[in-house]
Image (cartoon, rainbow, N blue to C red):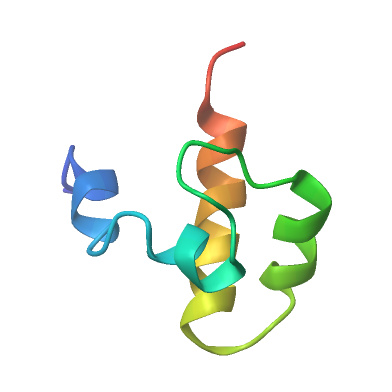
Length: 60
């Protein structure tokens, strides 16, 4: 059975994506910038893809 708190386990370094993309603290990362980063390989790409996935899960 899957863990119920997989999101907490998936986010090891909060704020790492924002820092690597050069977005200041407190500002949101633009969606276009996230989509471009999601196409990259490595940790930045992984974090961007996770951010896009989590964005879909948010309630409006």
